[in-house]
Image (cartoon, rainbow, N blue to C red; front, side):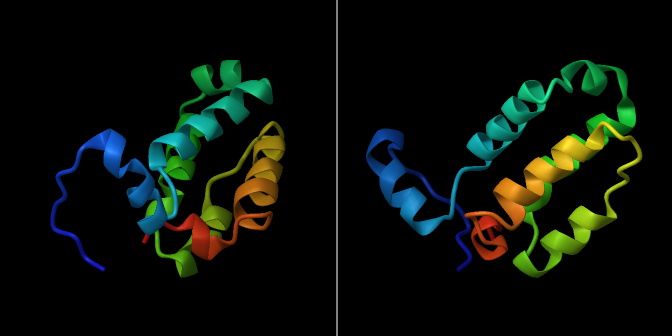
Length: 107
């Protein structure tokens, strides 16, 4: 379904909006950011431009078609051992855990 634009009262329409769309990109990104911090990778993030780029790409994954998410995730430029904890988190929670890739995609 293509919606050219939407105007709504936030408090009234939030529940209906969540029922139509699979989630909220803001809350997904916030959860990813909290995972990054809980995994102790904030300092690494703040000092490494490549890792910052990976995090931004992870935050954009739900904007892809469901068929493209796993292949795009696997193509990311993971180059450090410290990336392993985050990769495991993404696979376990978002890509093969209780949320299917079809539900993960906002499209």
